[in-house]
Image (cartoon, rainbow, N blue to C red; front, side):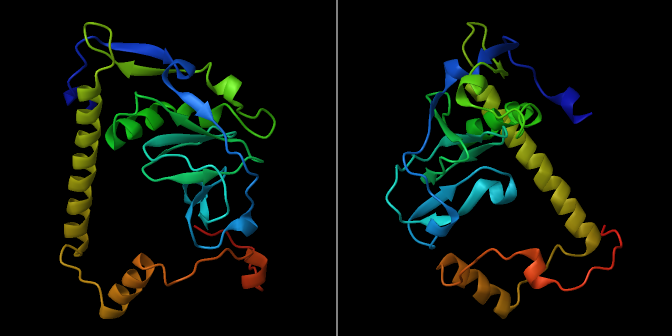
Amino acid sequence: SPRAKWKQPEGGYKEFKIGDLFEGQTGDVDLQQQDVNGKGNFFINSGVQNCGIKGRTDRMAKIFPANTITVDFFGNAYYRPFEYKLATHNHVFSLSGDVIKNELVGLYLIAQMSFLAKLYSFNDMGTWPKIKEQSIVLPIRNNGEIDFDYIESRIRELEESRIRELEAYLIAAGFEDCALTQSERDCLQLLRQQKIALRSFKIGNIFTDFTGRDII
């Protein structure tokens, strides 16, 4: 298997308590969905839809730096390569620390934290005092320090393997030389320039009929 081909870290693996690796912070303003106006910084709330990104807001609130990790009270962890603001009513925490060297390390860290989403729910919410006592397993060197070179190489290997798999699929499906139409390129350009507004709609306000059949 591909896993068997991966070189193991020279010092093996070691458990690190989350609270020893990161500093956890919360927002200072109770931002709400109505504060989203397409301007300013990204607004992060709890949940997995769109990785917790609710849109942009220019309402005055604490701005958290890029190259940090957010964890909500459901245990959903995401790496953030951009500045953002946090909701307070749904308990979203910003994790910062020297351990987050770059995006590759950040992606590895959230993968190791993925088990948190299995621990917490509405009935047992993940507060920072709870989360910081959990531990993650990281590769180490012979001197006991975290092996960041190994972490980065593992993420690069995973990215390369996924790209190869995608390329093989596109070739098999006949999409290896697929070009966007002018209309599609125009839409992408408008999105980049933020000239297309996005908003949420209730399903019941869009669809008027339901057949009762399973959707696959």
